Amino acid sequence: MIARPRIRWVVALALLSLRALPASAQSADSAWAHRDHAAARRLYQARLAADSSDTVALFRLAQMEAWAGRHKQSLAWIEQLIRVAPADLEARAARARCLAALGRFDDGLALADSMLNAQPGSVVALQTRARFAFWNGEAARSEMLWQRALLVDPDNVETRIGLSAALRRLGRSDEAAAMIAPARTRAPADADVRDEADRVASLLRPRLRSAAGRETDSDGNAVLTWLLSAAAPAAPGVQLRADAYIRDAEIESAVSRSVTTRGATAAASLDLRGWRLETAAGASASSAQGAGTLPALAVSLATPRNTRAVASLALSRTPWDYTVPMAENLVVVDEVRLDVDWLLDRRWSAQLTGGIARFDVRRQNLGNRRWSAQGRVLHTLGDRVALGLGARAFGFDRDLSGGYYDPDFYGLADARLALRLGTGRWALDADVAPGVQQAGRGADLQAALHAAGELSFSVRPGRRIGLRTVWANTGLNQLSPGAVSSYHYAAATLTLGWWF
Image (cartoon, rainbow, N blue to C red; front, side, top):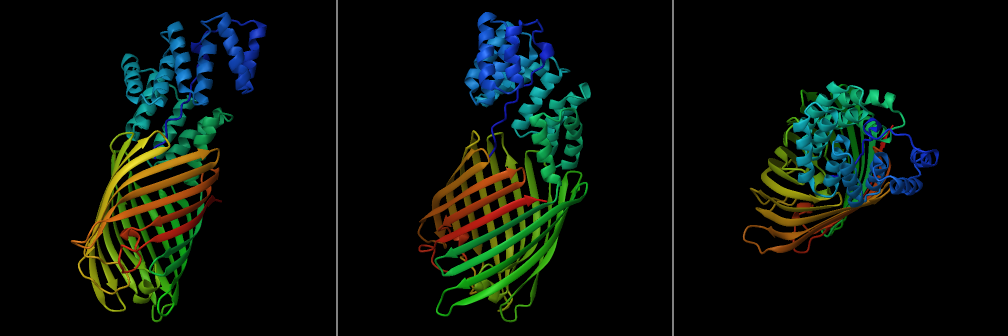
C-alpha cells in the first residue's frame, strides 16, 4: 500500500511578520518551542483575536492542525493566511500540500505547477513540485527537481531530506546517506532529519531476519520450517546475503512418514548503473533415503527503478522439499520467470508475471513442464485500504505421481481487499481475496478464498516482530495431488527482523 504523503510545514520566519510582540504574547512562542501544542493553540488563537493579520500565528495554527490530522481546519487557517499575505510562497506551498492530504491531489499538483512556472528558480516552488512528483511515483523526476533546489541552496535541510528519500526509492542508498549526513550535522534535533537518517541507515546496516512457520493442509501434510537470513553491504552498490533453513515435514497417511531437510544459499547483488544483478548458489540435503545433496542456483537481472515500469528476468534451480513426498521423490524445479511491476499513477499499480518451469522427479527419472501466468491491478484508497482484481493460471503437460499438484489446468480469479490499521508502533494488516477457481480443463467452477492477517510491532526502523496467519482453499497453495473441492491450507508464521 502506498502511504499518504506526510504533511510537513516548512516555516520560514523571514517570510513572516517580524513585528515586535508584547511580552504577554511571547508565551505563545514559548509554548510552541516547548511543544506544548494545546497551550500554543489557545495562545495563538488569542493573538489572532487581537490581530487577525498575525501571520506567525496563522501558519503555526495550520501546522498544528495538520500534525493532528485535521486537514480541513488546517486548510481554513492557510486560506486565511493567504488572504493576509497573498504573495507568500510558503503559504501557497502549504495549501498545495494540504489539498493533497485531503485527497485533492490534482488540485494541489496544479498549484505546485503554477508556482514553479511563475518562479522556476524558487527553492520553495522546486521543493513543492518535487514532493508531488515523489508522491506520484515519479522518483527520477523528483530527484531532478530536488537537485535543482540543492544548487540554489546547498544548505537547505528540507531539500536534503527530500533528495535523500528520492535516492532511496531509486535504490541509491549510498548516495542517500551522503546526502542526509550534512543535514544531520546542521539540524541534529530535527525529527524529520532523524527519521530519514534512520531509514537510510536501515538499508546500509547489516541485518538479520529469522522466522518460524508451521503449515498444515487437509491432505495430511504438516510442515515446520525455521528460516534464518543475514545480509550486509560489502561495498557501495554491493550487497551480500546468506540464507539457511531447516524443514521438518510429516504426512499422515496409511503409514505416517517424516523427513527433515536442511538447506543454505549465499547470494550477492550488484548495482550496475541502476540495473540490479543478483546471483545465488547453495544446496539442500534431506533425511530421505538416498537423497544426497541437491544444488540450488539462481541469477536475476532487474531494470533500473527510475521509470514507472520495473522488470526482472530470473533463472533458477530449486529443490522442492516442502512435503515428505516431494523430498522423497527428489523434486527439482528449473524455471525461467519474467516479472513486471508497473506504477500507473500514485493510486494504481499493476503486476504481471509469466514463467516456464521444468519439474524433474529424479527418484523416478520423470520430467514435466509447467507454464504459469498471473496479473493483478491494485488501487489504494488513502493509506489504510487497497482494492485489487487478479487472475492466475498454470498448467502441466503431464499428470505424474511426483508428489506435487500437477493439473493440466488451474485458473483462479479473485478480488482483493487489504486493510492496514495501526497505532504507535503496532500495526495490524488483513488481506482477504474471495474468488472462483477451476481445477482441470472442463471442470466446474468452485468458490475460492485466501485470507491472511499479520500483527506486528516495530521497535525502530528495520527492527520488527510479527505474527502472520494464512488460511486458503486455493489450488495455488496445494501441496499434494488431490481434489481441490475438499482442500484447505493453513499456516502460522512468527517473524523476527533485526539489525545488529
